[in-house]
Length: 152
Image (cartoon, rainbow, N blue to C red):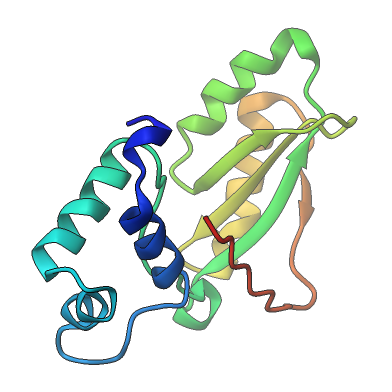
């Protein structure tokens, strides 16, 4: 998909869905009615936007800790020559939700999501053993809710 294929209706859908879905039996039908399209068209457009990469993710956000899980932000200082090797290791750790490069001494950051908070230290140790590098574990001390709405 290129930007020419991202039309006004796509923009309206993305802008509307950033406000959440209504708590009704058929939420997509309700949103489709608001936007003046059929539910089928709404779902087809969402599928096309996701499949084309315009939307990288579409789904609910869960509070993992309230569900009994563990979350933490962590970082590594990876020597440049080792960077790809460490990326490969982290990409194969099921508990790594995502990782990314930063321009900093701590140049690889990642989020660990585990089934329980007690599992976090073990996964950190496993990563340290696999990479040979110390993991800087930075668990959340306080939660802030920041709503982001990006008009398209």
